[in-house]
Image (cartoon, rainbow, N blue to C red; front, top):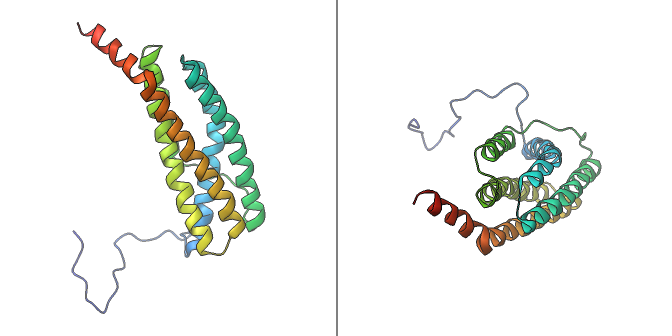
Length: 189
């Protein structure tokens, strides 16, 4: 529970910041940029595994397109590092690592076919939603701190992630979810 705060005194928090803590919005921007750079680079290694485990041609095609797009996102992020003067360093993203661990477990714990495809789509959409949140935030930060070229590049990545999320929903709803449900009904009868 938050302690009572005087109207004249700002709340200072109850967690002591690390000595290397972010001190301003540009610092937060840099941390977020390094975080998503790590995430995108790891996705270039994870998406091929998802392709190998998907059975729907439409899903396989979407995942292959995402791999191409992810390489482009990495290139754009490297351009952002260049135009902002930030060292192009990847910082391990705990959130993405957790999502990808869950993805690997889901693949192992589902039957090959439409059930696994439905799971791959669900896992991939968690990745997309994380990326959408991150790119949206970084875009807002870039605009606020006057990094207009970075904002433009981040908006491109953001828009592509949103389109991919919509495509995945379409693939799931067109047949995969229904077929996975039918497998469930057959198994339980």
